Image 1: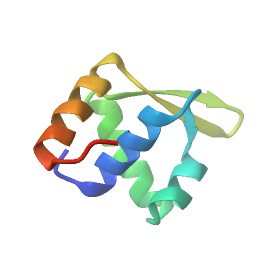
Image 2 (image 1 turned 90 degrees about the horizontal axis):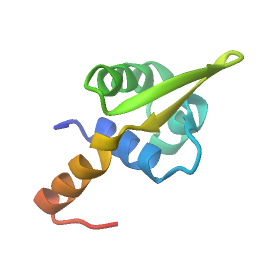
Image 3 (image 1 turned 30 degrees about the horizontal axis):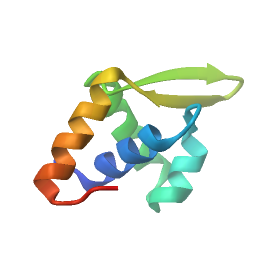
Image 4 (image 1 turned 180 degrees about the horizontal axis):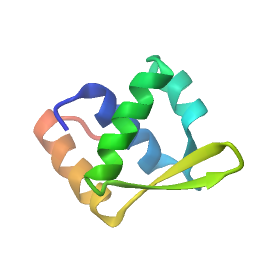
Amino acid sequence: MGNDTRYELLRRISNADDGVCVCDLEAAVGVSQSAVSQALSRLYTAGLVTRRKEGSWRYYEPTETTAALLETLDDLRGSHE
């Protein structure tokens, strides 16, 4: 989680009510679709997000581990949202 893009994506996914579409994440973090997809793939592989496909879109949701990790990262970064 040393990457700011992955951290920001995870934070936004965690704050969403019912999953977040890749298209929404791309616009929110201001990086390319390719960079978002790579970061999400790493988060998925790490077990920090789940994904589901609806039509041609993929939606991401946090896993149970995500809240604890974000709390720890916020403590280390000195920020709380």
